[in-house]
Image (cartoon, rainbow, N blue to C red):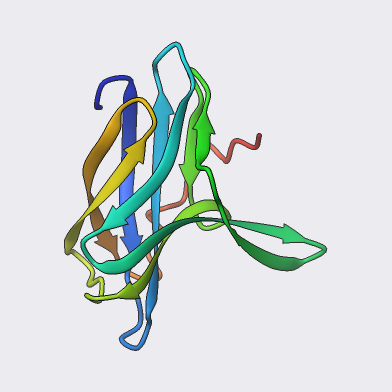
Amino acid sequence: ATGNLVIVKPHIRETPPAATVAAGYVSITNKGNQPETLISATSDISEKTEIHEMTIQDEVMKMRKIVGGIVIKPNETIRLEPIGYHLMFIELSTRPNEGDSHNITLKFEIAGEITVPFKVWEMNSSNHKNPQGHKHH
């Protein structure tokens, strides 16, 4: 927890050796009484870090880069997960290996920059399953 933000399960999925991109996942809850915005992120493993959204329309996966950030309303949790919003680490300088931890800096409108260690999970790990089911907005 940092100020009004609670950051849960930050992790990166391990990548195959030849991969040039990796994905990062995390849940962020806004405990404050005003909206907060996740504006952008930077990482110690890639040239660029972007926020992407993956949607499925007519059984087709679509990826788009989010410009302007993600608003987190008071008492709302946003989940960056495989379907939906997630971080994309582009032009990897280091391959994420299972068990490693990498510093990712999340930039928020109000809270400013918060550096969070993201743990690398193995590729087919089922750790990301959420027993409570997924909340749709």
